[in-house]
Length: 264
Image (cartoon, rainbow, N blue to C red):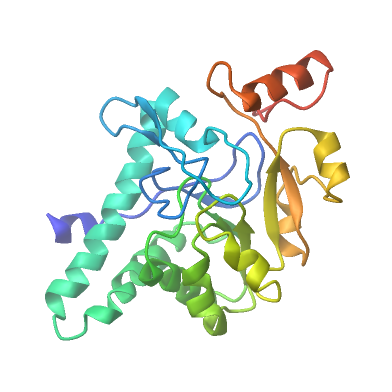
């Protein structure tokens, strides 16, 4: 079964309600986010039922992950993300089985799978890693870095709460690989302890005024992911009834402000 899965390619989308003209790669929200905090949300694989599991992390606001909500609403989206995750795990395990003396190199088969899958999209110069999900192991993060190193004409970027993995691999990051620290995880302390490493930081805010008060520009198209300073993201998507995040979105709606992204 593992070898059969490895012969299949990962799936990428090419746009969403917020982004276009790029490849977008996703894996299941929550299940692949080992350091998520107050946004830790899961959509059950079989049923799509939403499960909230927020836990403390610095002073970040609590909100429901928009990516998990997409999996809850659309079974095809959920199935595609789980398929990608299954393929990656199968690739990792094949390498371990074939090379038991070198288990630390199991990122190599994941790299090969990602490379082969990208070859099916030769005319896309920009790749967003993880509309949904995060770097679930350091080997997986390294696999993507090696992919970027071997594909210098493409730009790769990702938001991540896996800050220790980033720290451990900071000397291996190629010039075309851009990471943004996603504030709101259980490793937030590293953002403030090592600002020279985590220069790009995304903070979720409830209102435009909150962003202004904090001196942050609001990003609506991921362009700030290639800069060198912190920025803000407005909370959006379906939120739990009675939550502060939901109330903030409703207030913005009443005022004719931003409430979310939708494909035109």
